Image (cartoon, rainbow, N blue to C red; front, side):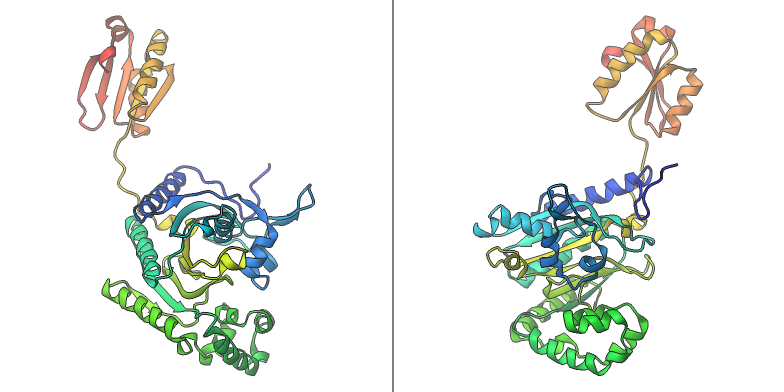
Length: 403
């Protein structure tokens, strides 16, 4: 028997209803914040992610679904969403138009990593990207939008925040961090030792407990921020406190991608196991320029759909729609016509087979339909349909033309 590949998963009812509800809710809230929907290709040039995510990252180094296509091009399935949106932004010359551009998207991403609960090789993200707004108030507004999404879905959270500095203050911090890391190099894992040379700030994000123990005394970026970065970070903290949002300062929060600067944040939950991040993002003011566009400030986030799917609290579902069936085969054409007409206003379930009234009622109840409509021999002769409201239990016969 052929099965889905390891780390790939079918989304079927009733989980698919929760999946669609999550995306619909998040999309509606994003639109209220002025974001427009876009789609970007699942397949991109590998160079896009090497230049944006960073060749030193585990995503590029170990996890991409990368191959040479029939035209000889080095391509890969997208491992994350931001880089493709930035490529779209530049390709469509939006970086040259000025102003603020806000987009939201959702869809599958692909990483060849060890599958575990809430973390698959094909997984889905919902994300937003804002281009052209420098103010830290935009960073805070994005955090507010994520808050609104999780509140609407009934998901609890705490927000972790940090600043990753800018080209003015990061070099000095990097120098002091590398000095500290070299002092403890022998106790670090192999990946951390490699990162000291390639991207030392990534060492702070290591999940190995022995490394974390050695990193307790590492210098923190927030002690090295320049005046502008420090001012923005203090403003962000003030705004979080003014709106009573639950937050923690986390000087070791560096995010997993190379392109972040200044604001970095994660929404975390203790309901999803050891991997507690359920959404994350931050500011990436240099990425548009790195990928060949005009320098453009930008900030965004993504949330992992599978990570939070089990936490989503669905609204209480009442009965919906109409069930239509026949007790005599000759009435089937009438039922089909009725079903087509009623689908313009509601959901309709149609049973083609001749059944008893009791069987139709049982089927309608199983489908959670609000109404059960059946045409028997008497109703067909009278040009009527028998209808029962399965909530109020009211029964009546209605002329087909008036139904």
